[in-house]
Image (cartoon, rainbow over all chains, first blue to last red; front, side):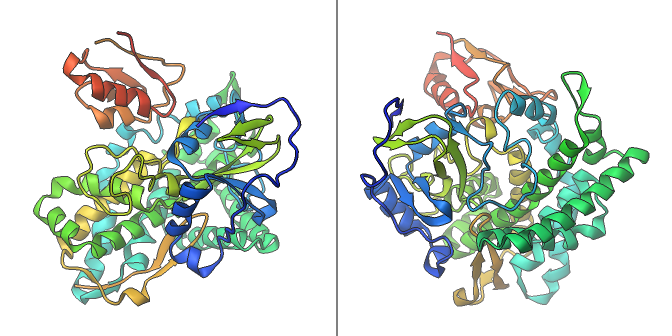
Length: 402
Length: 62
């Protein structure tokens, strides 16, 4: 694709093809992929009137090009559409350079692949305990019993939140996102305030009782030789808490569902556990929990032949990019042994997911232990599966037996 | 073949290490480090590493 800066004034949006895109429609919620395919083929820079109007990019190269050009496509006006209802910017993902770079550098080592490797034994204990509890029962809702608890328990461990608190912040985060998806700003604001109040109390506690946790380390971050303001500490904690669990719940639950739906894949994984890492990558490609993120046009620009004006909202569909048949052969199949899998489930460019190594680790350990402890799990009834979420897609109900 | 890492751009995603752990390794400092100069037989893989680096921090010198 060509991104070209335009100097002339645009003569209206009527030349651009439109598309009916209603993220809250039951059909789209259940299976958005036919819509994405139509967009890639017929309307790669599509306009929707939803959420105050936005453009959706659906092709792999277009999505990557925009993600790698933060100067023309800013994150400062928010990266979710509809807005997630966060009363303060998500940090650092809703910052632009040079500010973004400074915050990102401060966090770079915290979630690195080396730092995460050290967590593996502890994460395995958490996962094993959850699976062993259900293993004797012969049946369970894997979404509720395994996928939902693991990420909030782990992020609580990292941030230093009391272990027993996770059901509370998990429910508040879930409610905040659900409210945002139906544009219920009042309910979203109530949830956000309660979450911020909770986190603020925890941060305040670390000021007088430093601990070996990320909340304490956030208080010590210095940028340009100065400690960061306390509202930035809160914004960082808020974003790491939200991004650190809502999304991975989707990653784990959809992976467990797709492995069950592909018995041949499951059998190969049982026979050869070294393929688990490839299964994690393919699950991320096939059904990324963060299906898209937004940018805002900073200066008039032409994208794929369509004129966009400063201030226009743009949605980058990672989910659609991951099904682009010009990049992935058999894009609509769950293929275990792809030689290359350059998916964009974690985004691309400077804002690519900080917690990618953590998400991968949690997904890998869950899949390894599930296949070891309840390898014969099968979906009880496909009609009983419930998939929810637009901003953070996940399976909310996955009844299985073994 | 000489690979160059621009440390102003590297953000430690370790995508390169995922593609070829014999050549790239993320250090404890969360920056990518080169373990060896890759042989010519790895040119295509290295081109892929350059293209897939999310922050464009890698280049092939020759």
